[in-house]
Structures are given as C-alpha cells and as structure tokens.
Image 1: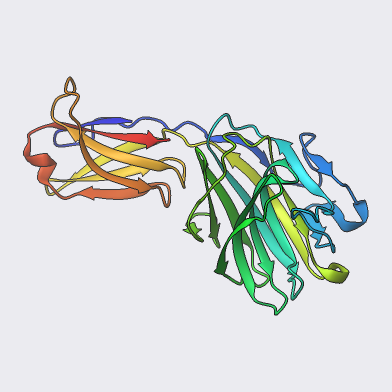
Image 2: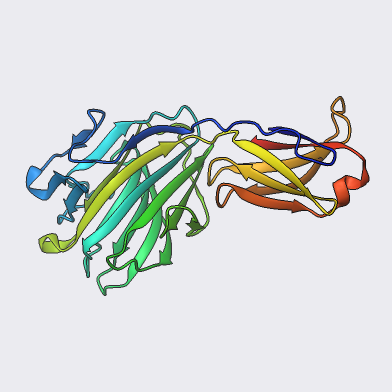
Length: 287
C-alpha cells in the first residue's frame, strides 16, 4: 500500500476481500462441512444457526470421546483469522461445558480457543493445544458473556496461535499470550461443544468465517501539516507504517508496527509531513 503526500490526498488503493470461507447457517449448512463423531440428537440447524448441546464428552489426550466436531478443510494457504459468532441459550454452570474453535490435525494434534465454565461456575476463555497426545498447554482469562452474543477468534501467524474475543464483532481483545503450534498448516478448521454432564449448556453458533490477512488500503488527509492516515485491512493482522522522501530509496523510515484493532484504523503522524515538501507513505503487511 503506497501513498504520496504533498498537501492533499493523492492516492487510495482498493482493499481486496480477505474472506476465504463463510457460513451463516441460514437454515442449512454448507456442503463443505464434515461432522466428525456425528450425533444428531445433540444438534439442530435452524434459521438462526446451529444449536449445539454440550454433551458429556471431551477432546483431550486420552479422553477423546467428543460428539459433533464440525470441520472444513482449511481454505487458507498460510496465516488465517478464524471467527465464530456464538450465544449461550443455556449457559453451562459446571463440569467444563464449553464451545471451542479448533484448528485440527488429529485428536492429539490441535489448537483450541474455548469459552467454558469450570466446576464452580466461573466462566473462562481458554487457549490450549495438544501435540502428539501430550498434556495440553493452557492459558486462561476470566470472562462471562451471559446470554449475550459474542465472537471468538483464533489468529495464526506462522506457528503462533492467539485467542481473541469481541462483543460487537468490530473491536477484539486478546485474551492471553500466543502459544506455538509447530505444524505450519492445520489440515482442518471448525468448532465443537462438549464436556457438560447431563447436557447442561446449549449454544447457538450463527456464523463461521475464515479470513486471510489482506494488504488492505491506505488513505491520507493532511491536518495542520500532520498526516492523518486511515489503514483499512484485516483486523488482527500486523502492519508496519513506513515513510520516505524518495521512491527510489531503499531506506524507508519505520513509523510504527501494530496489530490492526479495527478497520479503518486512524494513525496520526505528528511530524509535519516529515519536515519535507513531499513524501511517500506505505503500509506493509507483516507475516
């Protein structure tokens, strides 16, 4: 993404679509879905989405007796941002009832982002992984969504996986530090509801989206000699803003690195046009 600046907006590039798969479950599910360990008594598909019961089963090394793991073949060639919209119709109150996003290779090789309740009723967000049957790595963050809609998100950058949540689908908050999952490309992506005795816990899944980081677009408006930039791109992707006075130069000044928290995202370069009559800005997508 490149902008030339003198005194007015010179160039805006168009953002390309970064969604590679989406299902809004409007009374049906895409033919791309495979339901692993299917049990039709524990889920239903309606006009508002897929309703799942948290059955008394688990995806855990040595105890992988889960039902209804919804999976698609991973459509992202490299990094991805996986987002699911959920709502607890009957929130779980004990026994680790949960809804989980899954980047899946096998029952003993996966990464999960969960919203769950422990056996005392405390609500958590969890990021965990299992590798070759070993004990999962866990990171916890206390969060209770009640019966309001919420969005869970998993972001992959190379071998780093991180978990995020939102209550408005626009502004996402990271729950904890990323974990490293050494498989560079998970074979499948999906979701599952599980681990609640006597099916305590019912969740509605109303959308599932896989996106890849996009170069996006950059726009500029000068304000009293300062450059007001708007970066439009993939929320959750990492970008670097750079500046130069000469397009033929290989020495671009790095202004900032940031994870795009919303789109469009404002950035004000308070150095008056970098003290030059003209210059060039660019935003670089960082893998």
